[in-house]
Image 1 (spheres, rainbow, N blue to C red):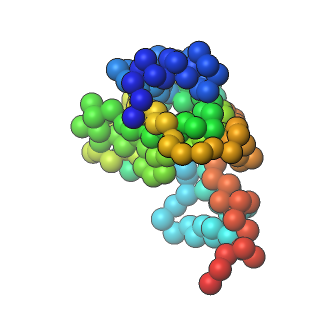
Image 2 (cartoon, rainbow, N blue to C red):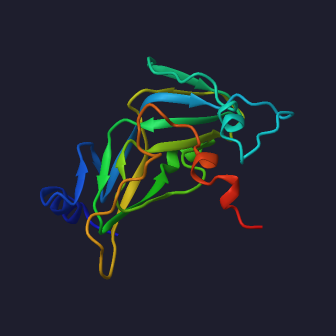
Length: 185
């Protein structure tokens, strides 16, 4: 894991872009726009091989907001306020803030790794696992990104991923990226 001094060195040498705040030796992730609620029901079946079925799981994105009340059990996708770019030799690991976990807010449910070449706004997968409605505020600190330098040879600058990092598109693109015909059985 890199220190704040090492991260600032990477920023000065264009191996990482970040204009947001730090928290100790990590990048502080704050809540941005849009929010994307999941609105499916327990009787709804989502076919993970059909992108239109996946798309049907989501409500309308919420872009113009200052606070949001998240119900118990609710799943919400949220854009991080500031964009991030990681160079070829740099990766990140998303972690939540324990203060929020202690009231039932899980900040990033799965896939905490941010791979080399990432460029754009991170999407957080949040779940209210607590018993009470939680009021979220635009710009509030939610988590941190620990930064790591990769060891070994690198193949130039890592290419950005086609489906990720777009601030306005938080939904899953699973079926678009892994079409049924490529799945081995």
